[in-house]
Image (cartoon, rainbow, N blue to C red; front, side):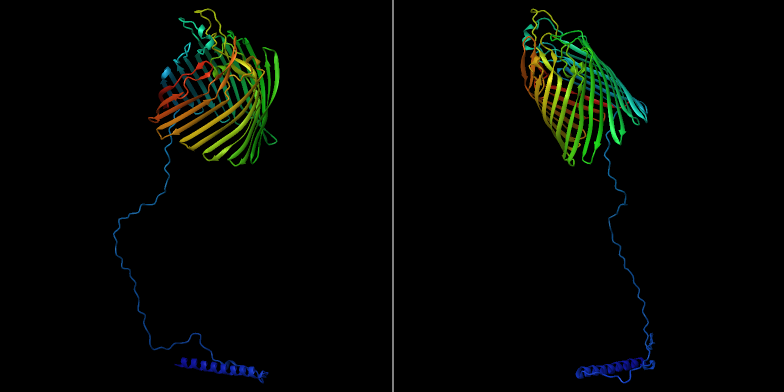
Length: 580
C-alpha cells in the first residue's frame, strides 16, 4: 500500500508544476513584459526521492503455475505407394555398327553382266598390314543391230603393304589391270563393207602393270614423297612406260608456312601398228616441275598464294619449253557460313598418256597422237555456303584457255578391198583418233545439297559450257565430243536399319562430233538421261542383298558416235562382310 501512496504524491506534484508553468506563459503572453528572477532555483538531492529500480512486490496471493503437457494423437493410414530408391539417370547409348575388315561382292544380271569384288586386310603385327583388292566387271553383250560383238571385261588386282611408326608412315602397292573391248561402232558408210559369212574379230585389249610407293614424315622438312612406275601395252603392239617422283617439302620462313612441291615425270611410248589415221610411231617427254606456295590467314580470309613452274623436253622432236602458271586459291567470308566468296586461278601442264586415253575411251585407234596440254589459264569465281544446317549451295563462273588440247574425232574412212575379203578389224571406220587444237571454255555452274538427317541426302550439280576452238583446221575447229550442258542428281535414303536406296540421274546435252577421213562431216549426238537405282537389304550384320538397275530411262543412246550402249540392265547379288 505504501507503493501506491508514493505514486499518488508524484502525480500531484507534476500537476501543480504544470499549472504554475501555464500561468507564467499565459502572463507572459498577456503582458508582453520581461520576467526577472530574483533568486535562481537551486534544487538539492533531498528535494527528490529515488525510485528503486527493482521494486519489491508484497502480495499475499500467490498462484502456482499449472504444468501443460502436449501430445500428438497418431492414426496410421494405409498406402499403396512405395517410392523407388534414387539412382543416376543414364542416356542409353545407341548400339554401334559392327565394322569388318573384309568383304566380298558378287552380282549377276542380264546381258550376262557379272560383277565381282573382294577387299581384304591382313594384320601382320601392331604396326603393319597387307591389303588385297580385286575387282571384275564383264558382259557378254547383246546390243541389237550392230555389226560386231560387243562383249567387254575389266579386271584389276592390287596388293599393298603398309608400315606405321612414331616418325613416319609408308606403304607400297603393286597391281595390274586387264581391259578388253570390241570396236563394234562401225560407221554407216562402212556397213556395206562388213563381210558376210566371215566372223571378224574386232577385239582390242590393254594390260597395265604398276608399282608405287608413298611415305609420310611427321617431324621433317620432307613432308611426304610419292614414287610410281607403270607400263601399259595394247593388243596391237602399242606400249607406254611412265616414271614419276613427287616429293613435298614444308617449312617456315619468318613465321610463315611455306610449301614446295617438286615433280619429275618421264613418259615414253611407241606404236607398232598404225590405224587408218596416221599418228607418230613414238613419243618421249621429260617434265620437271616445281610448285612453291605460301598460306596467308585472317579472321575472314584465307589465301594460298603460289605458282607452278614446268620445264618439258620433247625428245622425239628435239624441243624444250618453259612454262609459268599462277596457283592462287582464296576465300573471304561475307556472312558467317552463309555466304563465302572464293576464287581459284591456276593452270598447269597436263601430261596426256595412253593410259588416260584408254581409261576414258577404250575405242581409240591402235595408234594415236599423245602430246601434253598447256593449260595457260584455268580460273573460277563464285560464292558458296550453307543457308541452314542442312542446305548448302555453290554458284560459280569460270574461264579456261588450253593450248594443244585433245579432241576425239571419229574415223570415217571406207576402205573397200572387195566383198568378202577380210581386213583389219579397226579399218571399218570404227575407231577414234586424237587431234589437237586450242580451246577457250566459258563455264557457268551451280550445285545444291540437302542433308535432312543422317538418313537422307541429295545433291544436284549443273554445268553449262560454251566453246571456242582455234588452230584446229583439220577438224573444222569443232569441239568434238564435248557436251554443252551436263547435270546430275545423287541421292541416298536409309529407310530403316534394314533397307537403303541410292539413286543417280545423269543428263548429258547435245554434242558435236567430227568425222575425219575420205569424207568429212560434223554430226550431232542427241542428249540423253540415264537413271540408275541401287536397293540394298541387310539380312544380318554380315550379309546384304542388293538389286541394281542401270540405264532405266536412257534406251540405246550413244555416248560415243556409232556406239550404242546396253539398254535397261538389272543386276542382283549379295555382299558378305567378315573378319579372318
